[in-house]
Length: 126
Image 1: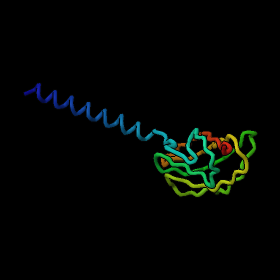
Image 2 (image 1 turned 180 degrees about the vertical axis):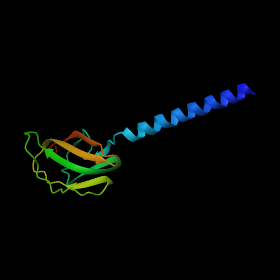
Image 3 (image 1 turned 90 degrees about the horizontal axis):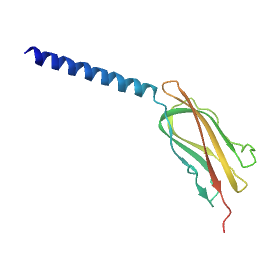
Image 4 (image 1 turned 90 degrees about the vertical axis):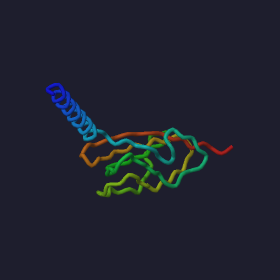
């Protein structure tokens, strides 16, 4: 009978430790960019009229910047909205073909700041 009690007690400790481990990992997990449009590393002949960022969980988009191949800022009409969302659409006006880099900064529900960047290319139609 003592052996059954010890086995049950050990199982409970392992279960508790596993639960705590996974809870801590979730609390410190950083939200990441799931997808974007124009797509990450995409090459397209269509000039986009908006930029869409889709995150794995709700975030506050704190900053967004787009630069062209000459490292010139592309003017954006984006103001920080303190609401938490998974998806953000930003109007985009691009006047030239070439490579563009998007840099973003977001804050998750847990207060962690995350940053990232990606590129896409607009090529001339053939």
